[in-house]
Image 1 (cartoon, one colour):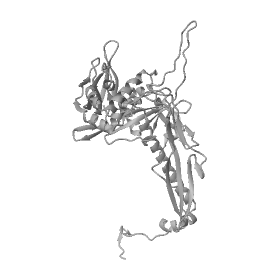
Image 2 (tube, helix red, strand yellow):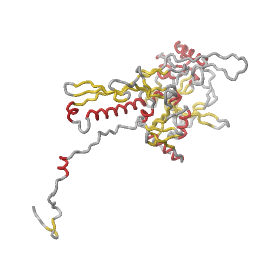
Image 3 (cartoon, one colour):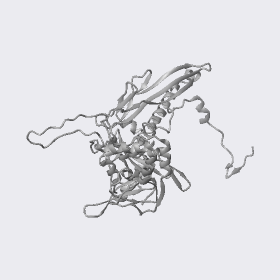
Image 4 (cartoon, helix red, strand yellow):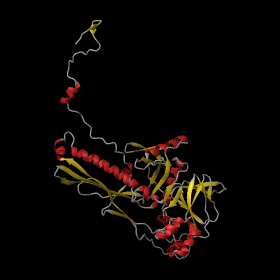
Length: 471
């Protein structure tokens, strides 16, 4: 080694001899302090925490309701080929007059008779007071329902979007008129099916003629404003008036919700389970993270499952479209107005952020409450809980849910069964499945759950909320 000096010192490229043990070597004799295994997938899961859970001992929950005559409250689905749009024939069964009609050949011909029409934003599709002779199936775009106020000013009664239909009375009522004006709020594509086309086909198809005749008899049944079988009452009478007789009729075939499940087989090698358990038990940590993943999947299913998920099971009459695309206080007010005693909103965090921007733009300050140590934004006193399981589409739209909860309040409830064999949490079990010839231990981890909407107005959805657009 060459040694030189600069002003009597050691050159800058030389290192002084090490005088103590280095940290790298010292760590071989030291114990590290470890965290438990972390997991990014874990969220607050407010839906699971806020839903009242009802014990389902038989594995199924039956929702008994008062007999209802309301029909045809679904949505119509379309297929698109280039610029051409066609309705799926079976989806015509969502129209009230065709509800439950299953003659595939007739539905195919009706679908072929639908004619596509395109409207620019601002164009009038139907005018209030004029004769209605066709049903409009809204394939794409938004349509405003325009009414007339008490002083002949224009009022917006609501907004219709993809999958909606209007003018359905025209198919069976020759005297039907438009009760409001339909105006395109955006570029709109609709399919039109005229009463003339339906009646011409009915002359040749006896099954269609019979279905239309059957439907024509339905309005003769006494019903209340919600389509339920009426209960005859008398009020305000004097003297010896004859008091009407009544009874409450029930649905003959009520819906049953069977408990769904999420499950997996957890595998742990015996050598890992036996030897590597200090300071943390390997099997316990594996199980803990598996349970977290199951609970995340459970919440996702409660929101998105096509059989019992909240988005799929919201009644069509409880679906609202935003007036300006972005979620505003007017939209949430309309959502609240559709039900009594709303307990909570559920929205994607991006939708909550978009709502906050709209409030800031209008100079409004939302309230907040403390829930389990977390500050939650409220609107009209109703908390807005975040839920990242609500999907956001590729074009930046999502939904906001509002619900009334609780069995006693005819609301939305969660369903589970407790007391399961090898239960480790409510409705969640971990069952030992044995050790195979490769010395791997298996555990079956299962969560049983579902959700039920007791009456239609317990749940509402603000659809097609734009989270990226700003004014």
